[in-house]
Every structure is written in structure tokens, then in C-alpha cells.
Image (tube, rainbow, N blue to C red):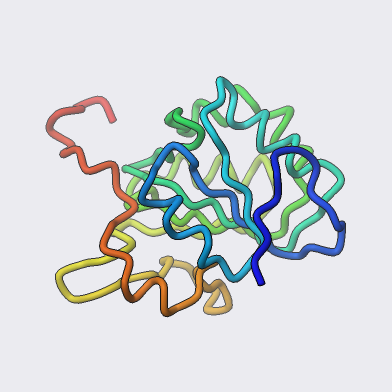
Length: 180
């Protein structure tokens, strides 16, 4: 059974995988009850990297799953877009994360690699991402990260992924945001 942990420290310390889901996205929140790993819903916050750091302190993990809407080079967590420069500003916090692998379940985040490289460099973790869409596609559900590690599975039960009608993209075309 999946337990939704309240905001704050995560216990028990023997947790090896944890999912953080963006609580500002209603469609993502629909998936959380189908999580196959312990989960935390990150609500709107002024500093999502600080909130994540507080959640992770004293809790080494094998895999941290971040589930949020994404776009080229950025992920939306806690109502804020986080990109490579945001990570560099928060480098001191990220260096305290004790995570072996980070799975970025966000559409197209790997199309521009500064966030992925910065996250890997600052945390020391192997970071998995994709340069395509995740979720329901015209050909059916697609939940593969473009990584070399086949052991990274979506943090949700397969039956839920087969029926979730959404994608983890920001739904806004690039031509509206030429700087991104």
C-alpha cells in the first residue's frame, strides 16, 4: 500500500525510493494514489528546492522520482519553473542531497541538457530524463525515460498509467516563449 507522507521529515529511514509530485497540477495529483512507492505532494511554495532539501535531509535514497510538468530544460514544482540556473543558485542545498539516482518524470526536460547536467553535477546522482512526451500519446501510454538504466520504472502502478489521459508537458508551444 502506498502511503502519502505529510510535509516534513520522511520516516521511516529505510525508504529506498521516494516520489515527489507537483501538487499544483490537478492531473498529476490524480495519479498519486496509484503510486507504487511512498509519495509526497509538494504544494505551492516560494522555494521548492528548499522544500525538497528539507524533505530529503537525513534520508539517503536509491531513487528520487520527481513527477511534474516539464518543458525543454525546466520542470515545474511547487508552482515554480526550475531550470539549470535555479539549480546553480541553490547549489549549496543540492550538495546535501544523498540520492543515487533521480528520475525526472517530466515531458521534454531532456531536450536541453543544462538542468540535467547541473542536477547530476550538484547532487552526484545519475539523472534520468526524456526529450519526448510522457503520458498518453496518440499511440497509447508512453512512460520511458531516455536513460541507459532499464531498472528505472515509473513510480506508478501500470494499470493507472494505461488509463491516465494526460501528459506531463506544459502544453504551451515553444514559439510563445522564444527564450526558453
